[in-house]
Amino acid sequence: MNWFGRKAAQGAARPALSRVYGAYGMMGSSPTPLSYEAQLREGYLGNAIVQRSVKLVAEAAGSAPVVASDPALAALVAQASGGQGLVETLASQLLLHGNGYVQILGDGAGAPAELFALRPERVSVEADARGWPVAYRYKAGGAGVVLPAEDGAGRTAVVHVKALHPLDDHYGAGCLGAASGAIAAHNAAAAWNAALLGNAARPSGALVHDPGDKGMPLSAEQVERLREELAEGFSGGANAGRPLLLEGGLRWQALSLSPSEMDFLALKESSAREIAMAFGVPPMLLGLPGDATYANYREANRALWRLTVLPLVGKILGGIAQGLAGWFAGAELRVDLDRVPALAEDRMALWHEVSAADWLSADEKKALLGVG
Figure (tube, rainbow, N blue to C red):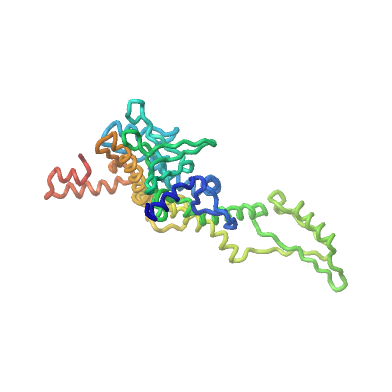
């Protein structure tokens, strides 16, 4: 076995639950990388921009009209997996985790009856001595099971669809890890804004003591008592606007926001745009201001389908078709572009141009338009 085979086998031996996907603590202070579950809780469940971006792409992918070379193949892909659409589930898994695993379940007679999407963080690849995947270990609830990559007839038993990871032979890279820095900044800005609103939507001030020429400085006991009284009676949103009674040479000095603090408020918006870029969603579709890239909402929606949804669905359908080729000879799955509403104008323009080409035969026009 050569060096590359040994390295691939060693990499595949690491369990998927302990793999690192590049995200750290939300404030960047944790020296230990976050697990995938922690990333989901802080980055997806706790961030509206990430959640909306994933839903936009995944739901659009799940709504894409699919055309199959065999009606039985189309019925398999159209079935739900765990109560959710198969293509939508795989699209969200590829965006977040970078990997999608589909187990092909038979009907007892040797024919595929169901395509079930496995939780990607529970799956680890097991490779042979040459580094080729031969099985997939699935762990759940403290128990594990080994799923062979092929069945007894040499047909695919588990389909692995993955995003590009240039440094890993067996696992793909999701968008969640790449956007971890922007997610951390966005969450931190949201927490700062919430704390600012809890303090009457203004920054804190300073209690200044002016003893005068003959006065004495405050003792430690007096300082502590003032601190407790301010915390109890004048901090928090419930005490917003409450008048402050000062005596004994005390005066209140209000503090204003500095330009750097104002930039920190704008950080949330810029982080949201960076998150949208990582997931391939035009910021205009998320309601983010300041986006002049697209002329209108319709153009942004068309860009979402052309640049993000269609390539993602093509990867998913291509992997499934290749995995089911052992049962369906010449299996083909593709998106019917003529039935995608966001691309209606593009398809109408193409039909008009092809129809006007008198030097093409009828069969050549059908081939160009994808009409069989």
